[in-house]
Length: 71
Image (cartoon, rainbow, N blue to C red; front, side, top):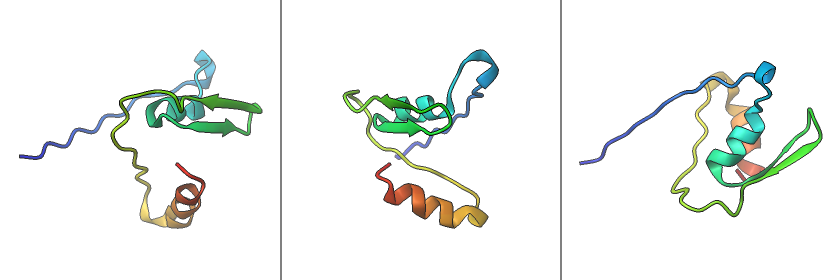
């Protein structure tokens, strides 16, 4: 039997957190934060089985752009 679990967490710039750093960590990839000019590299992280991005249908073009960027 397949089980699906989804969760959400808040990320606060006011607390010094970064959505890009969080996404990089969770996906186990290298991502560039263009706002701050930082690169977050978690490509050596082990144990990532799957990564998905779920967006509203009105953002389908953004989803295609993200998919082609290697995430």
